[in-house]
Image (cartoon, rainbow, N blue to C red; front, top):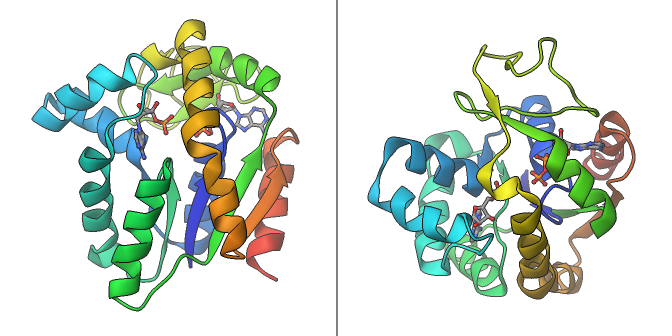
Length: 214
Ligand code: ADP
Ligand code: AMP
């Protein structure tokens, strides 16, 4: 099962992708997590990506596409995967299609987690990320047992640099200009499915499972 998660930044793609990955035993591949891990390790890729991420801009396609094509060709992705945060532009979607066509495969589902911009601003200002494991919480909608401490690993929770309100506004603008056209792209391929991302997290998940198991 090859699944793409679409939706604005903060729509809940990562939250749902994690659950899908657990339920179907497939890897959750988040390009944002890959970049953040590279930034933490101080790699060249991380240094380059950070320049764009801090501004709320997209990392250039040429730094993203090969990385994803390489990742999905690894052994653990043999039975499928859930892509979170990729593709984010039409050229990225075309690069993914080209790589899959070469090996006689295709994406099965593109799931759009639909949330209006007004809700997004609240979601992002309350999102907290673990510096150690990348786990994501929300101060109101998904709080940790102990404030500021990751339930999963005990790491420290922070507000991501790119979740500052000014950066979020730019990320939303970039989303509408560059990523939203993918909704049309996958509609034309007959694999687009939309879910109402304003429901609570388990309801959103139930809607996704209902789509995947028809
Ligand atoms: P994305 O991966 O799309 O950027 P996340 O999954 O990180 O988004 O979710 C953004 C924030 O909103 C997080 O703090 C998360 O805990 C919270 N969140 C996710 N889904 C919901 C939901 N259905 N209702 C309320 N808050 C949510
Ligand atoms: P995310 O964790 O998915 O919200 O991604 C955080 C940031 O990483 C984005 O705002 C972009 O700067 C960058 N990024 C992640 N995935 C991509 C991608 N597929 N294409 C370009 N930039 C990306």
